[in-house]
Image (cartoon, rainbow, N blue to C red; front, side):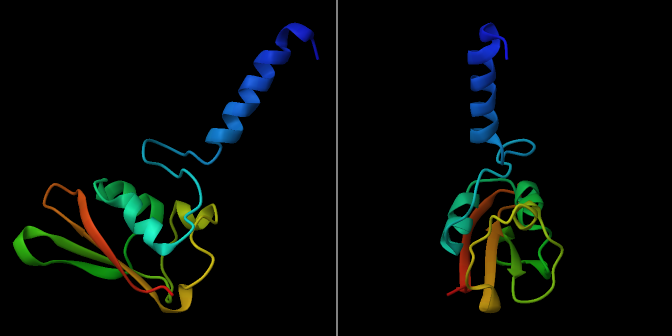
Length: 120
């Protein structure tokens, strides 16, 4: 390796390592979720369309609840279409057998709250 390119090469490698999990636009896949609560917390205030890319489409039918909010539920204990988090192995390593995540989005498609059901 030519010495004049050494520092540039090192910087490029560092960028790849630190951003290697980032795919697509923000929020994109950024790294592993240590807990199911982290999955929920990360998506509050974010767009539903990005959530669908990350987790795949909800496998229980989304429906409207109070005041124009939409509830979307992912049941991780049954078959579902995988998302980027599945593809890159970023979901928590435990609690799949009894895990549902419910997210609530406003009429503008922004996630406003979420909860886990099970996921112990």
